Every structure is written in C-alpha cells, then in structure tokens.
Length: 146
Image (cartoon, rainbow, N blue to C red; front, top):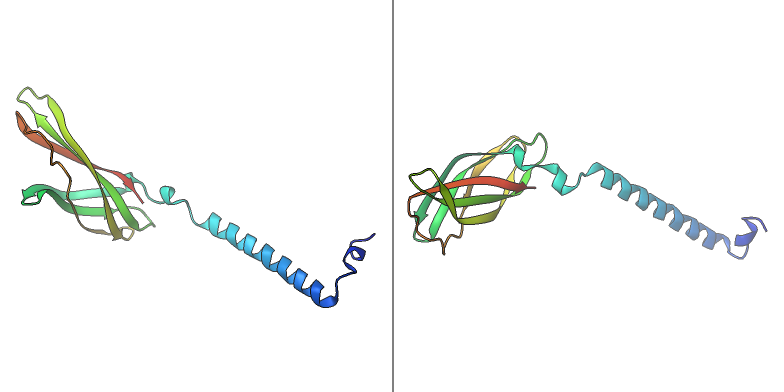
C-alpha cells in the first residue's frame, strides 16, 4: 500500500483540512522556536554588576529607617524592571571591629531604560534591631536585577 493509498478513504475536502492543520501546526512550532531563541532568559538579561547606585542616603523618620538614592542602569540594551537592594546595619566599636545588627533585602519595582537613571526609595525593616554599643555603620548592595 502506497502513502497516497492509505488516505484513499478521505475525500478531497478532508484532505485539504488535514493538510491545512498540518501546515498550521508546523508554522506555530517554528514561530515558537524563533521567539524562544530571540529572547534571552530574564535572569541573563541584566546583572547586578550593570547597576550603579549614587547619592544613597539613610535617614530615620516616624515610619522608621528610609533609604533614597539614584539608580543607574548601565546595561547596553535591557530595561531594569526591578532590583533587590540589600542593607546591612552594623555596630562598629572603637577597636575597628564591626558586628552585624540587622540585614534586610527590599525588592524595588522600577522601569529604567538602558543607559538611564532614576531616583529610588526603600523602607528597610529594622524594627527589632538592638541599639549599637559603638557607632552605627551601614552598607548596601544590589544583589539581584531583572
């Protein structure tokens, strides 16, 4: 039995519909593969190393600790949609030794196009942080971006 003989029971209209469905199925599959190849995975689009912070300022108000500053997106082509901002509060003694009092990571939604910057704000939660015995120190970093 030949290939064509195996479809002899189908009429011309059924063959046309079967061929059309096969064509559309293959076309959709090829298009999905193209899109998957063109769009890099979100994690690979922008890295924390491509993010620069400037003018970061820590202050305290009635709501607790607040942070504000400028974020610069140094990615050559991707828009920064959000980033994770980690802050560490330290108790620094006169001996130069610093002990961690509290840590907090804020996920901050943003929309900064490649090569541009904008202001940001964060409200870290240090509600149960003990009082420092020495000088209060702090540092921060962008730990994730997308």
